[in-house]
Length: 212
Image (cartoon, rainbow, N blue to C red):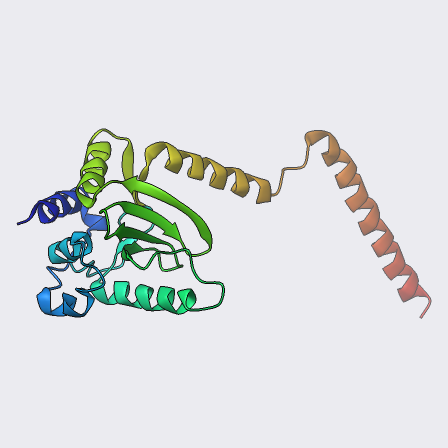
């Protein structure tokens, strides 16, 4: 196996059985042939030679699942169409998706220099995750083994501290929407109000019955 294949295999082994990531084997040279001229840097081809994405859609990293070459082609087509519009597009033609979240966000490889990028479809800020795919996968393995990253069923691999902050915000939101118990000092007044209302209702019924 290539270094990328080895790193990917090690990464997949870190996921628990209930969140097993299934990777497809190499996309193959025939599948890559039509992209050879556009992506001549070799970085993108090397990635898809190691894996053709996931066989399932469970999140692997930061809510992203690894893309198949077909998924990457679809993302390329959409980007090319946007780039051809009058306003153009800030996503570079040499960037290809290797993971996506299904909502327009992608992790991409820049085929010119091998950098791994976090790219959002509606924000021109691009985060450089690593200078190469090897470095990126090695850092994920290292951070997971050190406890910096954890595996979550919603996000896949995510920073342990960030996940704790997300859970804290969710718990705060839940507590805001829960009905608060009536303070003890207000309970006698509420009971009296209910009793008076029932008495008035009984009086109204008696009056209605005796004057029919």
